Length: 185
Image 1 (cartoon, one colour):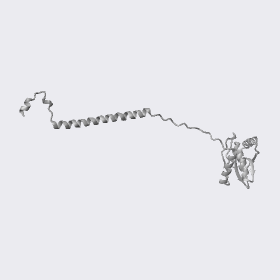
Image 2 (cartoon, helix red, strand yellow):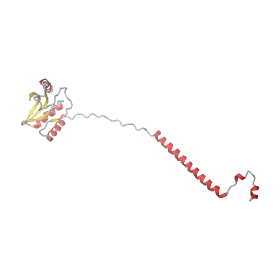
Image 3 (cartoon, one colour):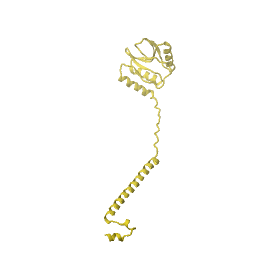
Image 4 (cartoon, rainbow, N blue to C red):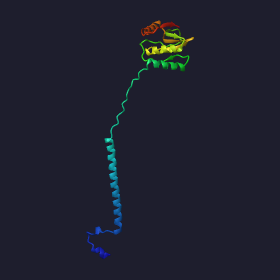
């Protein structure tokens, strides 16, 4: 072997290949480079996809809400609703909100506190008649309720601690074409 080594000049000494060892290292290096190249390609596609999704997707605008005014029911339906309420709750006062109110100060009715000036729009022995008048008053923007008094039903349009305010309410009822009286009790 010494002869073999002597025959080699110094330039070729560093380039000697041993057949079994270099092939395996070369194959492993090629596979690693291939996997790195695939990872680089997949990564660049993933980054460009996410950027494109943010840039190209439309911005969601908030939904516009539509405000709709619901009109008050006609007097005939309001009267029927009042009838149904009274049938469900017998022997109790029924107060329903009026579509519009006339600007008259109202004192809450409190029977246990003392006497009040009460504006009575009608007194009926028939409950249906009392409910019909109450519905007409409500349709005209006047708060009214039906209350059982003795053997009949009172349609009342307010209770006031002073006669002055009761008179204002009575006059408002008369201007709208309703008969009304003031009762002190």
